[in-house]
Image 1: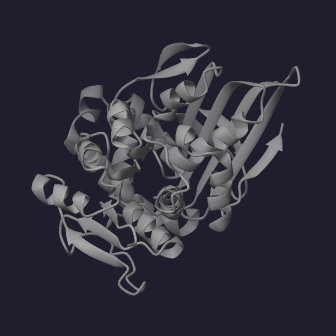
Image 2: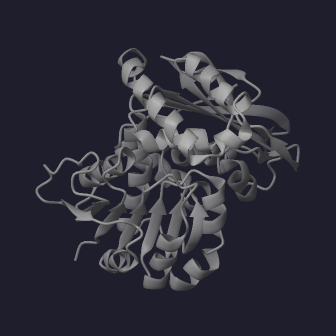
Length: 368
């Protein structure tokens, strides 16, 4: 019998992209969930009934447990993960069901990693922080780290055009990331950094070129040092196109009162206003994404820098490829690592290169 996949939040932009990727690259029967039959963007059902829809709210615990029990793999796309508990992951572990998510916030990542021993004991492979960033970005770092005798520094830069083709949830995630200072691994010790600070001009591939990026709170800031203990510095920076969005985001992070930015109604207001603005600017900026990974370290007794870049014309589709590829490997039995792991610890580089190639995603490499 073919393994069944349950995609929670599967009617959102990211969730539907994951469903589309899986429908393209596997034969697995897929069930996508949403809080109402009318809500959100339905995934294309042209795949001959491969994709079904289930009305489900995560608060409906019994219904959720039944849905998980009838699945072999659960993909959690119901963000933002700032607000999420680990109930879905815990239920998967209890029922022996493999788990993947698109989480992108350290609070959730930290909570999820605490269940690694239980997952390992249950034989459950749980891979968190999949998608494009985090996700494909983490695997690009691993690919770079493996070029060195001793990797020492990781610099990740992300760039999104307009809305990125994603929904309102991604806007919420951006503004939620501005609420609090966060810890980063700098020169072998933890330092507190203000979000959206220290603008830096970074060279991205065409069509972007030299563009401003800012410190942004991502789970990689603490999962990468754990995965690669010789690394003494991890930098994660994010920027938007057009550039005036960066300046507006900087104002929200540094000028607006902190107490105001920590109110949910303010996050909702900013998210909806931003999404309305991108509806206009998407027409000339596009909705693409670029990721640049730069690893510095020792190779053959000398300091060297290895740079990897990827560009995709649609951020949501790229995220679907990142998550869908890992789900595909789990379904095919090529990836099995009981426990809870971030992508860079779970996915071997050879498998990463294989699934990216099968999706036509080209990662460019160069020694600087």
